[in-house]
Amino acid sequence: MKRKRGIVSIVLISIIAVIFIIPLIYMVSTSLKPKSEVLQNTLSLIGSRVTTENYERAWNAFPFARYMFNSIFVGLVTTALTVFTSAMAAYAFARLKFKGRDKVFFVYLSTLMVPIQVTIIPLYMILRILGWHDSYAALIVPPVFSAFGVFMLRQFFLTIPAEIEEAAKIDGCSRVAIFLPMSKPGLASLAIFTFVNSWKSFFWPLIVTSSDKYKTLPIGLYAFSGQYGTDWSALMAATAISIIPGVIFYIIFQKS
Image: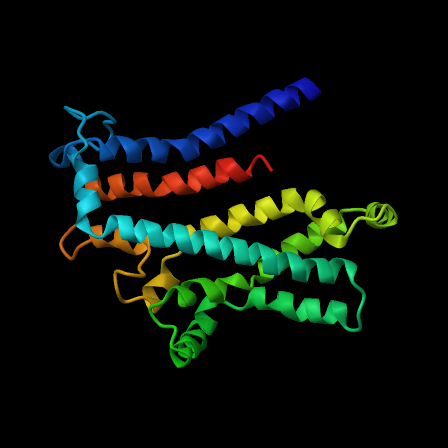
C-alpha cells in the first residue's frame, strides 16, 4: 500500500513539474526563433534556424544592464535588511516575555489583511515628503519591514525547543551563537521568498521611479509591449535573461 502511494505521489509530482517546465521551455525556444516565425506556428519549438538576434535586440531595447543592476542591488539589500529586521522581531515575539506581547503581535500580523492598494497612496505621499521619490531608498525601505517575515520566523523559532537554548547558555554561548546555527533553514527560506518577491516587483517600482537610473528590470520588460503589438521574441529573450539571477540565488540558499 505504501509503495502504491509512493508511486502515485511520484507521478503527480512529475505531472506538476512538467506543467511548470513547459512554459519555460517554450519561452527559451521562442527567444531563439527568428522574429518572423514567432507567430507563424505557435506549437513549434524549433524555428528554421537558431538565432541570438533576439537577445541582442532585447539588450539594446533599453538600458538593460542598468535595470538588471538595479534589480540585483535592490533585491540583495532588501533581502538582507528584511531577514535582519524580521529575525529580530520574530525572536522577540517567540522567546522574550513582555506585557502585551501577543496583542502587539496580533495587531502587527493584522496588517497582512490590508490590501496593498489601500496603503499605496499614503505610503507614496510619505516618500514624497521625505524626498525619497526616484531613489533606492523608495525601492528598499518600505518592503524591509515585513509582517509575513516576522510571522514566518516566529513560527519557526517556536519549533525550536527552549531547552536547547538553556543548555547552550549554561555552556557559555551568547544569544548570537545560539541563534545563528539553528536559524539557518528559516532565514534561508525567508531570504528566497524576499528576493523573489523583490525581483518580480512591478507595481511599486513603477510608481516610485521615473528615471532610468533607478528603474528595475520588470519595468524594462514592459517596454516590449507597445500600443500596436508586442515584440514577443525580444520579450522572451529578455525574460530568459531575467530569470537567471533568481535561479542562482535559489540554488545558493536552498542548500542552507
